[in-house]
Length: 251
Image 1 (spheres, rainbow, N blue to C red):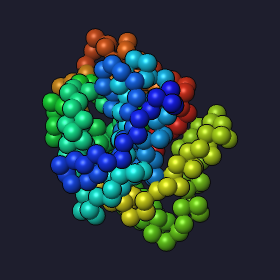
Image 2 (image 1 turned 45 degrees about the vertical axis):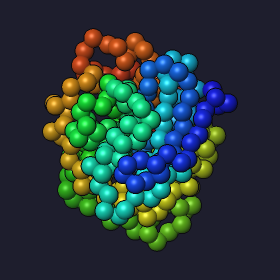
Image 3 (image 1 turned 180 degrees about the vertical axis):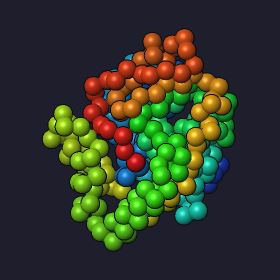
Image 4 (image 1 turned 60 degrees about the vertical axis):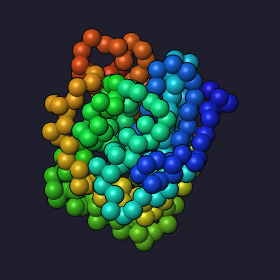
């Protein structure tokens, strides 16, 4: 429902940052947390189109993404989680459903760790338990070196297409590729390095067993949320894979 999406760019949280976000629909609150590499709330437009008839859909621009202010270089995953908690409080949201992909998935886990009473349910799509919690140490360092060099020394047009090709499935249309590339081209280079370091340092493996709210997960980004899936009888499970958003797990 493109015409019904409200965009706000001046929400100031208690963490001292102005946070941009998009909001549409009515019903139970569903908060969407995007991944890194230049993505922001605009990447969730298919989910707005599909879900705003049943939910109040809210997607933020994480600090340093889209229209939000850049965070201090010292920001780590706990700081992003605290800022997210303050953002949700500023909007008056109580026990929202929270869906995170990739970095947003790790952020969702950090939110549950530091603010366990905020999420009403949790949906993880292509999520990491942080790189330190999901990858061998040498692979973490290899990624850090490679991405830091490319972000720090090359124009995004030179390296973003290579990463995007690995994020989208072969069934992704040319239009989707160009649309996602356009979104990613708005990357905040320095803030993306801050987000990268936060992801690299995070080890959230011990969080999952402590999650009290309902937990759903899927390995591929899709549209894994409809009312029946949010209200399943179990505390954890595997969400069905949808088709409106063809994307593999990414940073």
